[in-house]
Every structure is written in C-alpha cells, then in structure tokens.
Figure 1: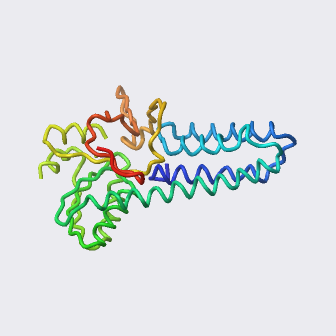
Figure 2: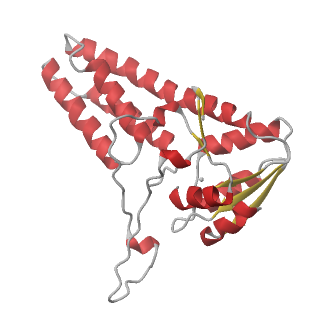
Figure 3: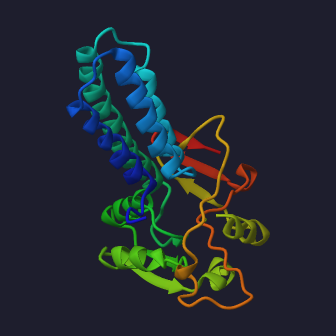
Length: 249
C-alpha cells in the first residue's frame, strides 16, 4: 500500500524473488516448489494487479520445467528477473511516449488517482511545448490525487486544478467506472494509458478492500463501511488504449 504504481509493485515483487538465490536447495524440484510458492504469495498480495500477475507468470514459465540443475535454475532466475524488470520499465516509458503524441497544445485533461505512466506522458507533452490544463480528482479515501497534483504542479506549462471526486462530471464538461460512464454520456473520449505488461488474458478480477479507518477514523454503530480499492470498467466504454505496443482504438 506504500507503492502507488502497479508497475512499481510488479518490479518490486519481481526483484523480491532474488532472495531465493541465497537459499540452499538440494534438488531442482525443491527450488521450483520454492519459486512457485513465493510467486503465488506475491500474486495474491495484489490480486487486482495484472502487471504483477504477468511478471510472476513470466518468471515461472522461464524456469519451471526448463532447467536441469539448481545452479542453472538460479542463474536463469537472476537473468529472468533482470529481463522482466527491464521489460516493465521500458514499456512504461514507451507507453508514456506514445500517449504524449496524442496530447496537443491547449488540451484540457482529467486524471484520476496516481499513475507514473500518465504523469510521464503529461511531462513529455509539456516538455515538447504543450500548454495544458489538467484537472485532478482527489481520489478518496487515500487522496492519491493530491500526490498527482503535487507532481503536476512541478511541471512547466501545466495548469493544475484539483476537484473533489463528486465534481468529476463538472470537470468533464469543461478515467474507473463512474468516470467513463459520465464521459460517455457527455461525449468525452476516454483513453487508458499503461504498459503492455498490464494487458492480460484469462484474468478474473478480484477486488481488494482496504481498512475502513481510511474512510472513518472512529467506528459508527450500526454502519458498515466498505472501502474497495478498484472497480471493473467495461472495455467497451474505453475509446482508445495506448501502450508501448501502440494504439488500440
């Protein structure tokens, strides 16, 4: 919960597997069981993060059943970790570069929550000379929008305006599920930006629920507080998806 980027979570989880390199394993089977167990634990730590699932699956696919000795397994694990981390970080940069090409001088954008890829895209566009107005929702209850606003405020040629979450419809007259529904009703195009590492097949979305204290510090008798982390947005409501692999309309 201290890492506000799905790509960063995937990178940290992948690097965490380097701990297996220092453990004693007698057989390849023992090493592979240890790897699969830890990769599974890491996947379950963030069940809604596709990038994390893809990273763990890639590490397992590259090693389990592919090695003949513990020494070979550990060498391949080290090489795979470096490759997967590099792929994630490279994809983030390329996705941001592709998104920046679709941002023009004078555009008004609305961003929700916190995304290092989106921030990089805005920064790239501003660096290339675009003057932008960016509305930022507060993203309660953890108010990650404030973190986004602070980052944007440090960029030249970016006019930052923060609105409460309930005012997102107002900002769009001038995205998560309520954003795209409002956008569709108002005829505002919606673009999702992220690395290809976040594209996944055969993935069953499982929401995460955070501590109720983030919403209400003191319990209220007779009131159940639910604090979901994410929601599922129908792909049909997204007009454009931009990744390091290109643009999908």
